[in-house]
Image (cartoon, rainbow, N blue to C red; front, side, top):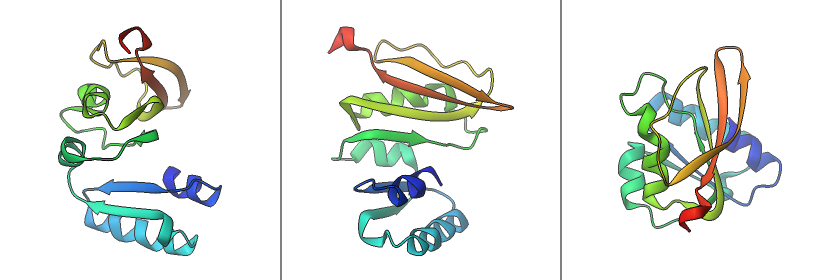
Length: 130
């Protein structure tokens, strides 16, 4: 829903990676509803596979993974290692409140907001390494 909202507010493009078929169909319906078919791409599959092979880079990467995935704590590192976040880009991550990420020298958290049992953390590249 965040990507669709961004498109409806003027984002040039959005790429959605979704593993759940029902969610993919719902996503496609909503993209059509806002008239953003030409500005969006829906890829069905595993996000780790996409990150391992993506030639694209992005200014903003939004992650809203299932909270039960076994690599949730490592996902920021996986995303930054993949190179999909532009040098000056950010990653926005929705996660359970009070969740601790595995530390990495690749990224640093810059903002965290909590909304009940959900938190949003924004990460950027660790500029000391760039």
